[in-house]
Length: 413
Ligand SMILES: Nc1ncnc2c1ncn2[C@@H]1O[C@H](COP(=O)(O)OP(=O)(O)OP(=O)(O)O)[C@@H](O)[C@H]1O
Image (cartoon, rainbow, N blue to C red; front, side, top):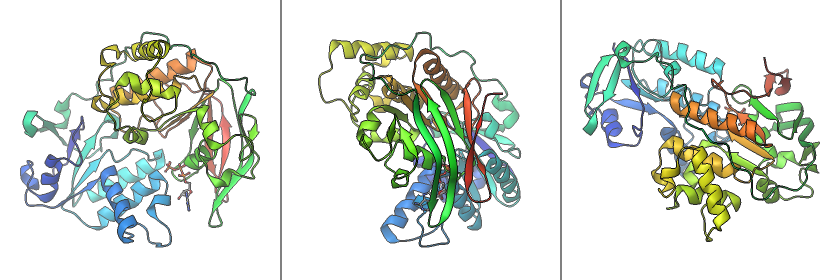
């Protein structure tokens, strides 16, 4: 059986090419008249929508709990198990390892090796390391959607990604510095969270000080998003705990919105919130007002600041291009610049490199490293992947304990 890889440089999971392939009318000759299933975020979103609209719980055994309350890794594992049980003729996997912890990636690779004995696998990949070991051939997309099938070895992989990033300028200073803040920005003391009497995290003791660069990691479902939502969001579980944000006990003093003004935040899914016709430059300026777009004429100073950021991103020429028309990596760089333009005391980057290819991830890593080196902003970076070239000072790792997960501070190697 021939299993295929396709380097995914913009092939839309919702697009016509994919829809025809799944129906058995596609361009791959031996998959014609066969029925396929697509494992992707798009499918997950459809299933979640179906659950909301029709109470149809496809992925969860327990009807009292929505798939929406599962962690992102748990959702993806549930979807794959469900699809494998359908026994499709072929399975298209769109970046299957995004959001999965390392142990789950290993386990999934083993499971997929078993599945591949009876089912053809078509893997859309962005990262070379993700290619499944049993994949023998690659499909090369040509203009007009025509495809050519070649042995994987001829795809020109194993070339290390472009080591040279073209970020050559220092990041600009902020216009207006923040008021004096305590040295310890975030303080958690024996923080515990449970849902339905099930302990998720316990005895979390953690301090993030000004200017520090942290990597938060832990297996799927270990509570990373939960901890972030206690800092940045309005998770009611945060109240009444020994949790201080910028010197205030959470739930007293500053409102969630006031706190958000002091925190820069980026996660890839927020890109979908920005659908207007704003330019790249306007998007960056909107970080000064925390608005989704820009609704007031910017001052000369604000314009200059945004242009300086675009220079850092090597995107001066795209200043007036519509944000929505930019490439995926350029949209992400712009949104990180937008989150950073005020030099907030804390910048949260939640799985920022999900779905990027190797070269794009390297570019993003260069920007994050530059922010870490050239600003006093503390960075909280959450990811399962260890990115080449990224050097957080500390790691806060969630590890399994007898009930739930607890945290351990690990200093760099
Ligand atoms: N509202 C809820 N009700 C019940 N359980 C919940 C709820 N919200 C989260 N959980 C559970 O809490 C645990 C921690 O979830 P969280 O999203 O914080 O994990 P995570 O470390 O971010 O995972 P991932 O790496 O997969 O994104 C998971 O087991 C999740 O299923």
